[in-house]
Amino acid sequence: MQPEVRLSKSETSITAYIQHELCVSSTASADLIGNEWWISRVFVHAKYRRQHIGTLLVKTLQTHASNLVVTPGGYDMEPVHQYGFYRSLGFVPDSILPEGLRWTATK
Image 1 (cartoon, rainbow, N blue to C red):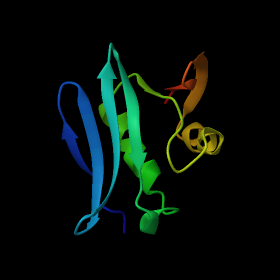
Image 2 (image 1 turned 120 degrees about the horizontal axis):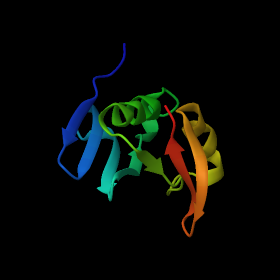
Image 3 (image 1 turned 60 degrees about the vertical axis):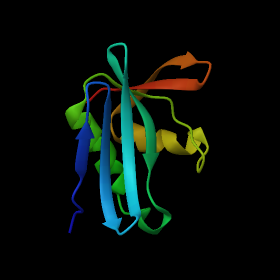
């Protein structure tokens, strides 16, 4: 059974989240910068990883935000390990920024 994804959206931010149990959730957020939505966070609780939760959350963001962009990186993974994840969701690298590669959603 696929978990229920909930959405919180304002004019400048979107958060998709799954409440797994009391005080345990997974989230993905994007912020509007200029005319692009930048993914600012994808977090899946350790207990729920490797179950396609991150994919479900980012696909939800893709449904609700046009011009979605990401610079892979984070606390739990090296950016190179995230490249396959974002590539599988239709993101492609399109330029180099000081923070690293910029990836844009093509789907």
